[in-house]
Image (cartoon, rainbow, N blue to C red):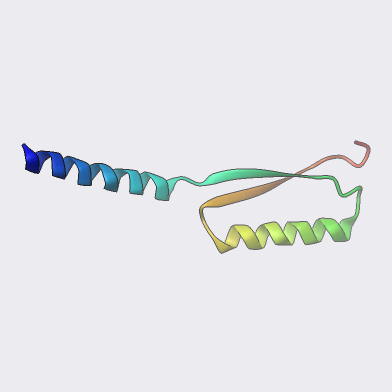
Length: 68
């Protein structure tokens, strides 16, 4: 019985680790640049660089219209 408990515990840990490795957290970044194309290009490049640098998080930009 003790061997079964230890095996079950080890299997549970590996299952949790595998599930965490597959999960990717999505983040929304709200942005209102008032139509500034240079600023928009910079923020988009920062997001692209961040997303390419790792695989645990994904940032997507949600822009507000200039009239907001």
